[in-house]
Image 1: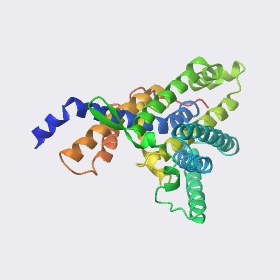
Image 2 (image 1 turned 90 degrees about the vertical axis):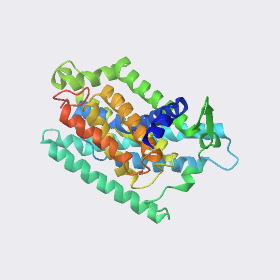
Image 3 (image 1 turned 60 degrees about the vertical axis):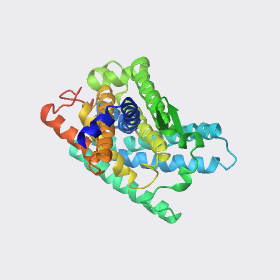
Image 4 (image 1 turned 180 degrees about the vertical axis):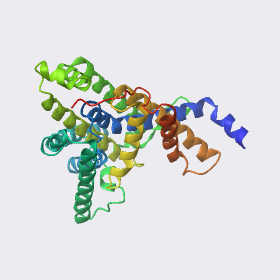
Amino acid sequence: MTVDALVDFLDPSTLLSVLLNGLSKASLYIMIASGLTLIFGLMGVLNFAHGSLTMIGAYLGGLVLVLLVSQDTGPLTRVAYFFVGLLVVFAALAALGGAIEVGLVRRLYDRPPLYQILLTFGLTLMLDELARIVVSFYGLQPISDWQDALATKPALLSQNVGLGPVSVPGLRLFEILFGVLTVAGIWAFLTRTRYGLYIRAGSEDAEMTEALGVDVRRVFTVVFALGAGLAGAAGVLLMWDPTWGASVPLASETLLPAFVVVIIGGLGTFRGTVVAGLVVGLADATTTWWFQNAVEFTGLPQMTIFLILVVMLVVRPQGLFGVEEVGGH
C-alpha cells in the first residue's frame, strides 16, 4: 500500500497538484504572518491580538461584499468589489491599529515585554467577545462560516481550472497570485520607499535613527497600523476560502499558524517569514496528501507545522534568518 501510494505521489500530475496546493497554503500563511512579523521586527511587540484583527477583517470584508454584491453582479465586478472591500478593510484596521498603538501599546514600551503580552492578550479577549456579541445579535453563529459572505464569491473562483494534467480550484490560483502581490508590495515598501528605510533603520538602531531626525514614535505607529491593516487584508481573503470562512474562532485559528511561521522564519525578519511560509505550506500540503491517500487519518497534517516548529527550536532556536535581538524601542 505504501509503495503504491509512493508511485501515485511521484506521478507528475500529483506532484503538480500538491505543489499548487502547497503554494496556496503558503500564500495564506505569509499573508497572515506578514503583519505580525513587521510589528515585532521594529517594535519588539508580540501582538496576540493579531488573530482577532484578521477575524474582524474577514467579517468587515464580508459585510462590504454583501452590501455591494447582488445576484445580477457579474464575476469580474465581484472581483472588483473584493478589492474595494480590501481597501476599506485595510484602511479601517490600519486606523484601529494606529489607535491601539497610540492609546495602549505606546505606554508600555519602557516596561518588560510581559506587560505588552498581557495587554495584547487581554485585547484579543475583548475583541473576540465583542465580535461574538455582534454576530450573535444579528443571528450569525460564531462557530460556523458566514454563508452570505461565501455566496459573494464569483463562479470563476468556485470552479476548477485545468492546468495541464491537473484541475485546480480557481480560488487556489487567486490565493497564490494574491500572495505574490502581497510579498512584492511589502518588499517594495520596505526597500524602495523612504519610510521603508526609516522602518529598517529603526529596527537596527532606534536611538541613532532618532538622533538623525526621524520621529521613531511616529514610525512605530505607522508600522503597527500597517501590520493591523495587513491582518485585516488577510481576513478578507480568508472570507472566501471554505476552509477558513468568517467566524469568531478564526481569531485563534489564524494566530497559531502566524506565530509558528514567524518563529520558524526568525522573529522580526520578513524574508524569514516568506521562506518559512513556503516551507510550512508545502509541508502541510504534502502531509495532507499522504494522510488522505495512504494513512487515511486527516488529523495529523495539522500537527506538521508544529512538528517543524519543535525541530527548528531544537536545531536553530533563532529561526532560519533570525538574529539574537530585534525590536527598536
